[in-house]
Structures are given as C-alpha cells and as structure tokens.
Amino acid sequence: MHRDEHRLNQLTGAIIGCAFRVANRVRCGFFEKVDENALCVELRKAGLKFEQQARFAIMYDGVVVGEYVADLIVEHTVLLEVKAVKTLDEIHMAQCINYLSATGLPVCLLMNFVKPDLEYKRVRGNGRRIE
Image 1: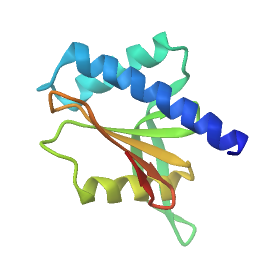
Image 2: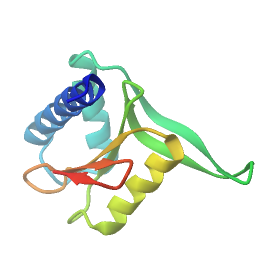
Image 3: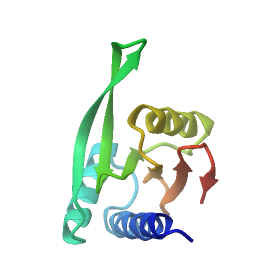
C-alpha cells in the first residue's frame, strides 16, 4: 500500500471515529447543522484541522457558473457531506462524486446521522465506494 493511501485510510478512520462519537452522544432526529457542529467539536478534540462551509467555484469553459459549499473539508484532503435523511441513496452518492470532481479532492465521506446507528459511505474520486 502506498504511503499516501495509508495516510488517507488513517485519516478517514479517525474522522469516522469522530462521527461515531457524535452519533452515540447526540442521537438521531436533529437537523444536519447540529450534527455538523457536533462533528466539528470532535474533530477539534482529535487535533484534526478542518474548514467548515468551504466555498468552491464551479467552472464551465473558464466561466464561474455556480458555487458549491462543502459541509466540511478535513486536513485539506477529505470532504465530508453530512446528511439527516431516512436513508442514503444514489443521488447522495452522485452528489459526492460531483463535489469530488469540482474540488479535486480524493475522497468524500457521506455521513447520515438520522438513524440510531451512523450510516456512512466512503466515496472515491473515481466513483468507487467503500463502506
């Protein structure tokens, strides 16, 4: 395994651990913003650097045609998309793939806090999923 891949796996593992701590303490039923803010507390406690509500321009033919606002970007490497929905489906996966394409980041963690147990998907820039 390459060093970069190992580092990425360690980082995503640490982030998922933070998310499980939030899911176990906050429980389900809150709005996405509550889960996102609680996740920020855990990321900070874990010593991870992050940017909340990071803005990215969407370009088309050299022209800005829109904007994407990432829930969280951790260590300038992992994009986090926080959800509070009944279940994650393909539209959420497609959203992550589009965001990865727009940002050039290697991986997105799609996290759903609405169920009693945290539901998450790891989406790679090439569209490959790892649960």
